[in-house]
Amino acid sequence: MGRCRGYEKVWRKYWYNLLNLNIMSIKSILMRRDDMSAEEADQLIAEAKADLEERIANGEMPDDICEEWFGLEPDYIFELLD
Image (tube, rainbow, N blue to C red; front, side):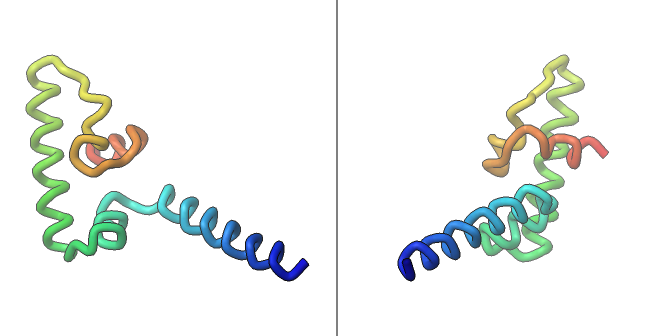
């Protein structure tokens, strides 16, 4: 019985961390997951935004840009579009 409770705690912590990553900003994820400084994260995000704008200007809609630049799912593209 004790072993199941320990497993449950680990599983609960895993899902808690996973859900917290999904509501974090790109910058927060880069800083937490990749140990980047705020300046490094801002620079990478600025480069990704410039790439996105250039690709849109060329007629593309790069749905996978967040995966390419950050290893994140496409939902985060809205943060780059603002």
